Length: 147
Image (tube, rainbow, N blue to C red; front, side, top):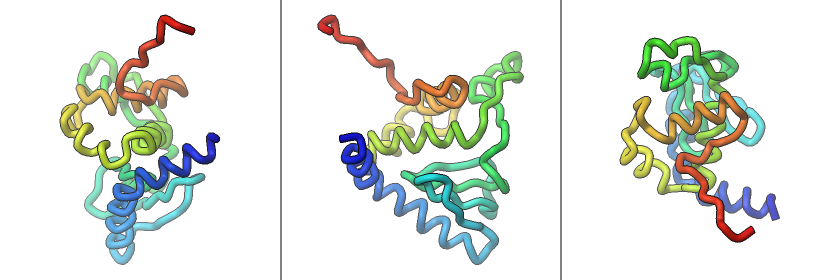
């Protein structure tokens, strides 16, 4: 059943993944390099890029590797929290999981929640996942009173 759900998630995220694939392929003649990281396609060395961007199951990023530490979005918002860092690969993995559930709804919801901002619940959830290994969903889960 899990494989069926994951396959459905991939199909649901496919329109966004196609955007990422096209952007990555356009950048290849200008220095971008594609590689697979598990089930995700990654384009590294994206020209005119800073940081990373996930579109569906495709990650576009400026650096050579996703295995770097970056400040959390909270650390960017509050300078006193500067010590908090996460592995970029884990942060972007959380966004892939969000896309598998939300599919084409991800981008409109992401921008409704504030876009690229420390106040965006999608970014805070991705940081939480990167720090704790859980909690990638941007809204709190409500437990039923009936177990």
